Length: 150
Image 1 (cartoon, rainbow, N blue to C red):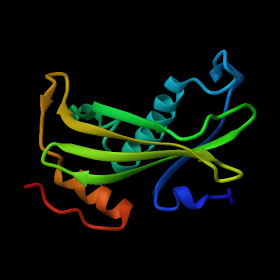
Image 2: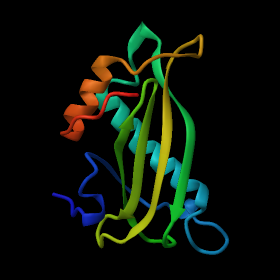
Image 3: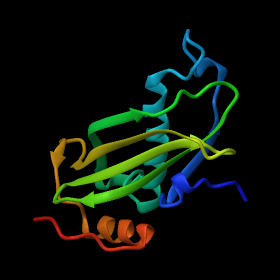
Image 4: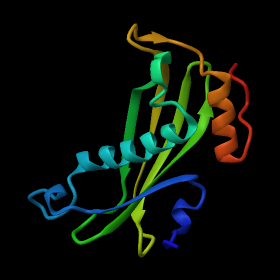
């Protein structure tokens, strides 16, 4: 069983990975753009779990509308990392997520972030309501209900 820091305890999806040498910048710490890749890895794992990616021929899928990061501490090599994803809000056609990246061994929190994802019908790029089955899968994974959109 992998160590889980308190910083990621409330995240139902986590992804563990090593910091690669190539992810560092000239100042000897992880490049700030890498955090968004780590967030993406946790987000796609979450969406795969709830059936929002790889939906076959239905055309339903997510598109990232906004994202942000708060850098708390630099990540330096070597490091084993863990990224977490959770949903904080389900809107009419959007899902708001929170992310965290921490040291998988020590529990040090390196960054927090967030994103807004819109549910789309591809290839038309038509915004659609969050399907009831996706909402139900999120609520089951999170272990709680979300208020209906206003």
